[in-house]
Image 1 (cartoon, helix red, strand yellow):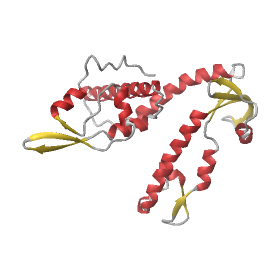
Image 2 (tube, one colour):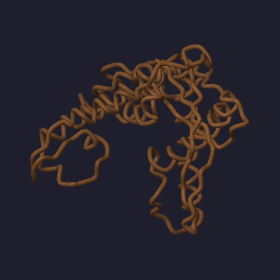
Image 3 (cartoon, rainbow, N blue to C red):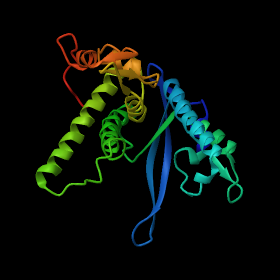
Image 4 (cartoon, rainbow, N blue to C red):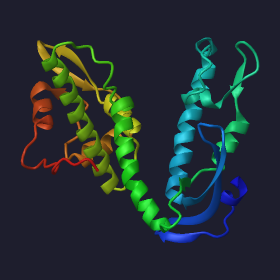
Length: 262
């Protein structure tokens, strides 16, 4: 089945830059009583160059993390194959190397996305439209559970608990709005990348002749694009407190539009 998925045959155009194929599939499973069943289903396989580039970039980031882990092998005692550890091959107690076979195996699937469905009477476009909406909802829950780290909740008073989740929800809306603004400017980045870039936006406070000055630290390359998307002037290398306030205070010229989830 994998070879049928990866072959370039039988693809149809779904939209600009996206093509798909429909593959009949038999889902063999056992019920609670151990009785075997065969369910007729469909596999809808999509492929796009944009997704292929994103998959390759995401994998390269994991490879870079794996390379950094190899520089400090003492921190590789955990057996969890997650993050950069996904591409590490262990040959001894503290003997690790890049798993070239795992990297090559994953690269074969760059650009591909599959949906398994029992709705055999629906067209591929109908299935993809329905799943796209579901995918947005599921991604939103994933962001709130992982990227924003809503839990654990270190509060016990109801008012504090409500306030905690209200702040998390506002942060979620702002993150999704920022993701949408970047997407509209053809800057496609994951919530994780956006968060990494936001965390890199820092200043160091110093005092010179009793005056507080704020020096901009080195930021992620995505940071300047975020400033541009939000219509905020970038920070100078050296800023006074008044300059920071003027830059970060919303004005009529800085309209971010209405907040929306997607």
